[in-house]
Every structure is written in structure tokens, then in C-alpha cells.
Image (cartoon, rainbow over the protein chains, first blue to last red):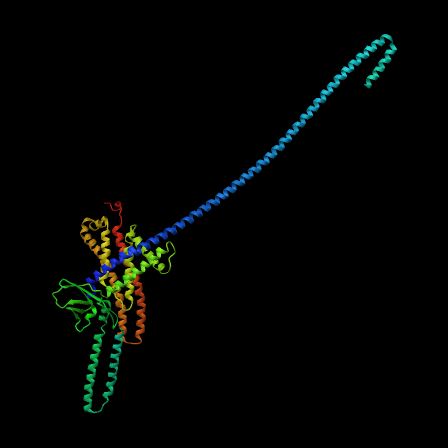
Length: 164
Length: 364
């Protein structure tokens, strides 16, 4: 049957035309088309990658910010706490110091008072002793002259001594 | 095909007028006239029979279909509108001869010592039978193929220009329509079947797909050539695939032919011939599949149209037209499917021939 017998002329033309089409299309059509498709795919992939990277960076940045804020807060709290502590300490120290000072002043005052007292007492003792001696001298002198006069003297001395 | 309609109406008209005139003349009373009338009736009947026979001989659906499917030296777009095509002949004694096929339009279909034989398909034979000629004529199929080649080149180079001009931009218009198909062939057909070295074979396979597709679709147009339903064309394509497969096949592929793995030695007697037959069956099946599918589609469509001219009924014609319309849609689908299958199988054959096998898998 003629339908099933290939015609050599047609085979020849088919070979020539088809191979020409293959070569022309391969060179002038498929090469730029496939290159264009590939470039675009790469471009899209690159853009997607970049977006992914940017998103990751954003997340990183956000967490960094949060960390910074948390750190700042912590530092602030610490500073406040420290300041408070320092203030408290200063107050306490001043209180202590004041107390100590006061105590010292009191002690000093007491010591001075005691010294004065002792000084006064010893002065009085000396005074009393001198007076006594003087009295005794005078008594002795008067006794030697007059008994009555001596007694008056003593009484007189005694009263003057109390006035002193 | 218009001429068939005209011819059939004419024959039908003659037949009916004759049939109606028969009973009218039979009513004649006289004996003598009666004989004359019967004679004339017989004569008329003979005429009718002769005309019917003639008409049957004229509308032979088989030869009509064959005429439409087969190649021709001229392009008959419709009856009466014929484009003559160049006839190119080569013979050892006369060298190259080029003349128009319209030169055969004479009583004997003869020109310059060549005779155009109308059989199932046309053939040019020399009148002097001792001469041997080679026919390289631009036949209807070759002309159609040249047109399809020009269309393919124009379409895809213009699309390539789009890619150059709109670099890394979204595809537009026709470019995006073609891009879908190109990407489908690349990503769904070639890449998975050929393997990692697919880019080397991509231009051939893409051209193969679009060449078959455009010729399948062009073949469906009225008055067009039946290129992909021609065995010479499908054979050439199948042989090209066969050559590409066997030029690029690796050692493993050839080794597998003579020593299939995992086959006991006595079975090799059967297996080796089977493998070798398999090698040739692959392109053969490619060739026959495309040829048979497209030719069968054309035969079905032409048979349906032929039915219209056989029945000549206003009731049947629309029904058949609807059928033909439906089948035309199926044929458009077949045009895509056959182009796809040819490309798919070609990539599978290439892929199986260049596939790398790790030696551990086979124990040799």
C-alpha cells in the first residue's frame, strides 16, 4: 500500500528542512529563550533568597533591640538600686558619724566637767586647807592671847568660811 | 468537495425526473405505443443505472480519502483551485530537471518524457522504463513543511527577541503563551526523563515537539497537507531520535544489549535477540504511532464528511457535521497529545541510553 511506503524525496526534504529548523531554532531561538528563562529564574530565586535573608535579619534585629532594651532596663534598675544604696549608706554613715561625734562631744564635756570639778574640788581642798591653816594659825595666835577672843574668832572664821 | 455536491444534486435531479416520468408514460393506452414506451422506459432505466454506476464510480469514498491523505505534486486547496508546485527530478542521463507540475495537465498526464501516475498516491515515472529517476519534487507535503518551518522560525525568533529585550521581566502576550509550553516541555518532559545532562538535548526535543505540533494542527486545516500522517516524515523523525540515542549512548547501554543483567546464561540466547529487536522497535513504534494516529484521525474525519455525500440527506448532514465537529476537537487534542508523546518517548529513550549506573548496583 502506497500509504506505508515512504517516499525518498520526501525523506530527503524532511531531513534537510527539519535539521535546518533544528539548527536555526537552536541557535537563534532556544538558546536566548532558555537563557532568558534561566536568568529570570535565577533573578527570582535571588530576590526570594534576599527577602528571606532580610526577614531573618529583621528578626535578628528585633531580638537584638529587645535584648538591648532589656539590658538598658537592667542597667537602669541597677543604677537606681546602687544610687539608693549609696544614699542609704550615706545617711546611715552620717547618722553614725553624728552619733559618734555627739558621743565624743558629750564625753569631752563630761571629761571637762570632771576636770573642772576635780580642779574645783582640789582648789577648794587647798583653799580649805589654807583657810584651816590660817584659822589654825590665827586661833593659835589668839589662843595664845585670849581664850575668849579665840572662841569668837573661831566662830567668826566659821561663819566667814561658810560664806566663802 | 463542492463539485461532489453539485454533481450529486445533478444526478439526483436527473434520477428523480426520470423516475417521475416513468409512471406518466406508462399510462399511455395504445399497444403499439405501449411497446415503444416500454422500450423507452428500458432505455431510461439503462441510462439511470449507467448514471448511478457512473456516479458511484465517481464518488468512491475510499479513493477520496486516499487522495486527501496522500501526497501530491500539486496543492489542490479545493476542487478547481490548484496551486502547481515545482517538480524536481534527477536522473543520471539528464541531470537535474525542474519544471512546474501544471505541465502534467494534459490528456495523458505526460510531459517531457515523464508520466504522472494517479494511483493511491501520485508518482512520476519515466515513459522510457529503462531510465531510473529520483523524485525530489516540492510536493504538497514539502511545501506545507516549508511553510511550517518558516512559521516556527519566525515565531520563535520573535519570542527570543522578547527575552532579549525584556530581560528578567514578566512575560507578555504571546511570549507567555509559548513560555508555558516551553517550560512544560523542559520541566515535565525533558528534565525528569533525560536526566542531569538534559540541556544538550533540549533544543532538539523542543524543535521536535513544536514541529510535530504545528504540522499536526496545520494538517487539520481544510485543504492542507497531511504531513505528520505521512510515514516518510515520521520515519525521518524516528530515525533522528534513534541516531541521537545511539550516538550518545554510554557503554552501559551497549553492554546491556549483549549482556542483560541478572539473566542466566542459557536465557541469553533468547534475551539478546529480544534486546536487539527492542532497540529497533523503539523508533519503529515512534514512527507508527504518530503516523497511525494522525492518519486515522484524518480518515475518520474524511469518512464522516464522505457519509454526507453518500446519504445526501438534509437530516443526516447536520448530525454528521456535529460528529465531525466533535471529532475535530478530539483531533486538536490528539495533535497536542501525539506531539507530547513523541517528545516524551524520545526523551525517555535518550535518558535511558545516557543514564549513569553505579557499578555496585549490578554486581559486575
